[in-house]
Structures are given as C-alpha cells and as structure tokens.
Length: 519
Image (cartoon, rainbow, N blue to C red; front, side, top):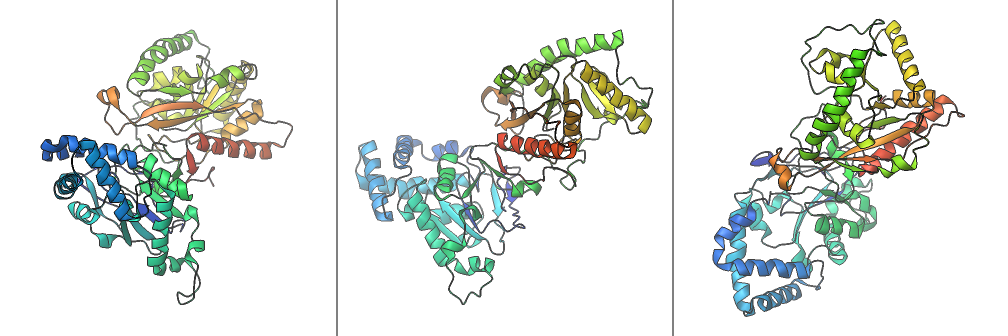
C-alpha cells in the first residue's frame, strides 16, 4: 500500500513507495501541494504579478465558485471560467484569457521552481500511477520540480475532464481513462492472460484505489465520491516510511512528522538511551509500597506544585493540550469509586502527565514503570508521580504484586502504557502487552482507554516550538468492564482486542499496520 504520511525535510526528497501487501492497484496523485510544498508560493507569485493582484484574487474567487462543478467538456469549462473571470474584473474575456495563459500560469511555473519538492516518483509493478490536477500546465509544472509526465502512467487535469474537483462524474471519467489506457498494468494483478478479455472496471475494487492529496475538501471528497481510500499529505511530499506505508486514516486526521526514525523492527525497542547515574537495586528490599512521611511529602509536591501547576501550564501553553470526553468520568462516577486502570498510547515524554491531568488523577495513582528509568536523573519525579519499578527477580516480583494488591484494597487508580516503549508522536498504535488486562481481571477494575492524538502547530503556538512538533489532544474513551464470571483467558483476550480496536477508532485509524498484540 502506498503511504499516506509525509513531510518535507529538504529541497529534493526521494519518494519511496511500498506495495508489498498488494492492496493498491491505482494511485491517484494530486500535484499542487502534494508533490511540491505550496507554503511561500503565494508571496513569490505575487511578486511576479504585482500589477495583477486583483486578477489573482478574482481567479481564486472564480475557482471557489466553480469548485465541484461539471460542465461536460474542456471547452465548456473554460468558456464558463473565463466568462466568470471577466465578469469579476469587469474586463472582456479575451483580456482575461490572455492574462491567464501568457502571464499568470507562466509566473506560477516560475514560482514553483523555488518550492521544496519530490525528486522522483518510483515505479511499482502492477500499480497504475495517475497524476490528477485541478490546473492544466501540468507538464510545465512537473518540469519545474524536476519531474516529467513519463514518471506517471496517466497525466490529466480536471478541466480536461470538464470541471474541477471534487466531482463524482469527473472521477468516473478519470477511471474510465485509466481502465482504457492502463489495462496492461492492471492485468498483472489478474491470473488470466492479457490476451483474454478482462472487465477491468469490475476487477478493481474501490478500496484498491488510493488518492493522495493535500486537501480533504477536494482530493478527499473526490476519493469519497467513488469509495476510494484517501491519504492526506497536507503541504508535503510523500515519504513512505516503515509502518506508515500501510496506514489508512479517516479524512481530516492529522499525522505529524517529528523528523524521527522509528525502530519499527521491534515495537518495544526503546528509542531513547538515558544516562544511568544511579545504582538502585530493585529487589525484595525496595519499598514498592512506600508510606513514609518523606515519600508522602515528595508525592504532594510533585502533584500539587509540579503537575497541577508548572507542568499543567507547560502542556497547555507549549503543547496546546486539549481534553475530550470528560463527561464519561461523570457518567461512570459510581463504577470508578473502587479504582480504575487508565491506559494510553505511549507517545510523549510527559504523556503520563497529560493523562493524569485529563482524568483529574489524585496523588494515589500508581504507574508500573521500567525499573531502569529509576536509575536516571528523573528518579525523584518518577517515584513521586506514582511510578513503581517493575522488578525482574521472583522474590522482588512477589513484593511488587503484594504492593499492587494493597493499592487495589485502598481504592487507588492505576495507569499503564500497554505499548511499553515510548515513540514520540508516532501515529499507528503498536501491539499491546496483556499484563494490564490481566490486572483488570484480577482486581475486577474497569479499564479507561485514553488516546493521544495530534493537531498541526499553528498560530501563536508556533512561538513555543518548531512546526514539526504537533499539538496534543487526549480523548477519554468509554470504559471496558471485565466480566469475572467468564474464564480469565477468554476475558483478557476480549478486553485486549476491544481496547486496541476502540483506541484505533478514536485515533482515526481505519487500517492499523501493527497487530493488536505481540507474538
């Protein structure tokens, strides 16, 4: 499957595509804003058209009026287009046509040369590559970014089909051209000989068509009109990268690129190598249950001074933290009185703090954590935030389990990251460990799934962090209650599957590229 996730990182980016699972037969590329970055294009274009800035504004207004219209043919489309443009400016049609063809479009081509762009479109066996743009002058634009029409199997514009995106009739005409002109490529998917007649239109299912574009309202709506999949690449180029190459998301769902290379061979490989400057032994003598005054004081300071004041300000101002679904806490208030277990995707250094602020957690919340992390400079915060190191020896594990038995008896809440390792701003959900579901069954505690999703960094938020660092939203999902009358194994499996599936849905993931569990 082709990728739906991309960002610019340098002037020329090589587009790598992965179709190993053979789910995609036709890929329809948008051009403007997808194969080159449109940010900064308007100022550069305006500098070349200073004397025609009113014409430029009129052109945008006319395109907005004609958006989604079908005039039946290229000639009728341009008759309507130049007529509306002339009316907008109070000029004659020939004057506006001459400006558009001899001044405006050549200026746009020149401005595009300064934009970041892809450097190549690789070929995939058995996959038809279609370039479908709302503008003509496609060949000139491709040349401006170092590509050519030969890099695609079919190149066509919406005006050539008689209108502008998004329109179902235009998409059907586009597919008819693909079926007519690219049969030799599509037939590679069929076991029959290409000498035999094949009904190509019935051979390709809508979910085997992928539309790649930067705009949900045009490219996304075009895909929706024919039942195809849509992958948004807002102001970016397409960089197929690991698990993202198989990811399918709902329209409008934002996928960030923090410019990180994820170790996707192993979902639990840790990306960050902290400095271990302590040598604490996590054996049977470690205070997994610490009721000392010193601990309680540190616990109070971390929660009421650090978490609910300093970290809260940081998360709301720098990370734009938003919360959704708090009404669920009120609705299930009685069921949560005996404690609950929250889970979330592990995608940010302060994601535990995000979840705790979201749930209005108390200082009695306990979080199982990797023991090695307590041998770092973060020891004080981890311990007093409620972190409990997970030991590796049998004797220590008995004491650890006894501590959590007591936490449950006291009605404490617990928080677990079932993905185990933290991968910052990673979109797909990784496999979940079953330990948290076993714990929920053992203690008969409801599980509250929380999902951390992303928003583009815009406006004043750009003052506090680079554009590639997204803003965060935490959504509380409906709880999952264990049924302890059923066999433990079956019930753990059910909760495991339901939690992963529910969180994928809330995250806007249609097709996740990891299994829901390890092994």
